[in-house]
Image (cartoon, rainbow, N blue to C red):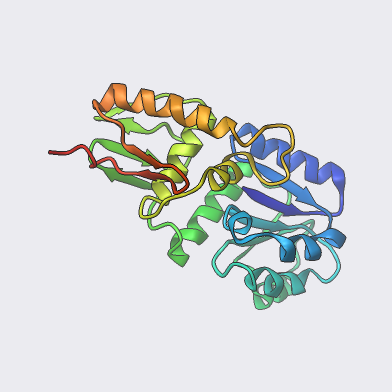
Length: 229
């Protein structure tokens, strides 16, 4: 999920709509509400944030310290209305990972955030291959046994999230936050189970076994090698 801190509703709505078209959940928060919002988030919720985007606003330079008190490696990107060398240098000094000028396409923001994460060790690669499953993290369809598997964007995002967290179990709530975003009151959390059920059937049809292990109360884990042997 992408979090945008922006004082202008029109700008915020434009970017969140753009991310939505790319299948990436996002929310816009006005600066005066951001401090209390980020400090009140649970660890599960804060870990669902893939990047923070901060538009021009007062005291913006204080936000990196506030965010880093909750999450050390999540990309922080400043969005500037106009180019200023002095301002850019000040923002980098304040702790931002990148500074870009508007207008900028959401696809470029996603790539920049992925590069920052990769350098920080959050995501070691832009793709992962395990057994007969290859999953990309740039919007491309996964490949099963060398052939692309077309998936609805929600199912694709769930698969990507499970693969990114393949060394640990993740809960339904964590998957929901990663796929639908925080503060989404339009969709019930139970929809995740339906998406996963459909995804498992499609993967099993291609692989001959189910690579998603689920345990009640513990959550889900991806293991494409679980059926080997």
